[in-house]
Length: 617
Image (cartoon, rainbow, N blue to C red; front, side):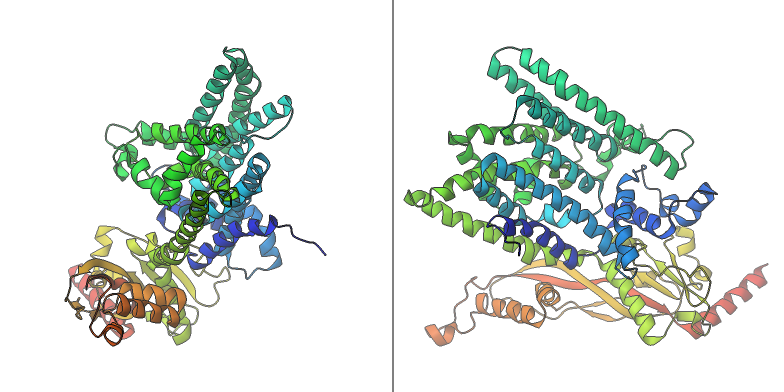
């Protein structure tokens, strides 16, 4: 029987919370669209070897919706390749969950490798605190299984950063580790995210400066440059180009050699005169990464400032803390000069910044019985980590899971059609097609090809087709709307014709502050379809969706106790509100409507419109 040491069970925390986030929020959004659709197409249709251009145009999503710039297929090929053996064993496996679990597993392995390298470099206590801190954060865990280019890059950069952690070994072995780290950085920059080249530059420059300062001359720095940095960079560039250029030239059927990441870099940094490049997606102030992003990524303010300062101020941890902080914060600082900023752009530096906090946490924890100050700090450490985990997994996760009304609407439509044996205007023909129109919001909030019913290759049974057209002329044409059996719409009044509302998908609405004495009153919103009740508290519904009736009861009880002072009159002889009568009210409002075309009316409308067209002609 295998016995687990005290260290090994801790390793299960990271993959467990990644899978938890995947289970609670299994859907994807528009920024993940390319990789999730590409993985679906490779798994479902394979890689065409004859009539290649026609097959790509007929079967692959990227030919219909190419996006602003081409993206690499390398990540999608990896996910499809690793998922295929599982599907051989069980074809009924949920494919979208599977491919996301594969990516989450790869990122979990890289984070665990980083933790294991931290154990070898700094001891079990530091590695244990690193795992606890990393697992108590939200963004890295939530995004670990999301098929973004940044998340393919995260696994490789984390492995590279683990190779830069100190470990007792011969000089030659250390140089080989540095060379491999440079290689991984370079391959990642060439294939997935070009900004990783900046991270590589910051770490290489820091190592060279440190070598020069340590020995007082440039000889050792030049030796490091020749033996590790340059060879690793050249090898990584060549290998990366040999992977991405032929693969992506083939999949995109480009007449010229295609390097997707170079195309994206040019488009974003050096846009044409009639374009804003990346800035078109929004800009932020220069300090946004430091004042907003890092605090949100690390969650605990105790981690963000205090633990770093403690690690730097203690002789035992000072040099290691600076090695972890300086090159990575330099990357964030230099990257801050670009006006367009996104949280996920600085994901690669979160593991080393978290490890820097773990250094001082271990220092405090191992000395908690020596000084009263360390004892109280250790209690604060435990409480702040627990609070961060509570915020990440019990609050932010269920709130984020509500961001996918499109996926919920499509599932509701499929369930309705199956349970009612109702297929819209074509219900009288068992071999007919079922046409569904999907509006812009629905396609951006969770609908993927994995969730759609694929048309049968034998043409037997119902044939499901999904229209994602946003052509303004078509959307205003009454005759065009008559072809659809169902529609998923943000604004149902835009669906021309006679439609019934099958179901409504709700989500969080406006936030307002209720003042002392102000009551929550029932409100209505009349849309011409139904009177929509927005009286229900959004937080109550989040608790219900996440934790069931017990969660709803807890949310309602918390409001009664904190705002309304339930029970205090019996205890104190007078009413007492812990919030002074104030409360945050979160709306619960419709996001999408699932509509069904009225069958008999649809036929009449077609006949009328046909007669009008005939009369006009």
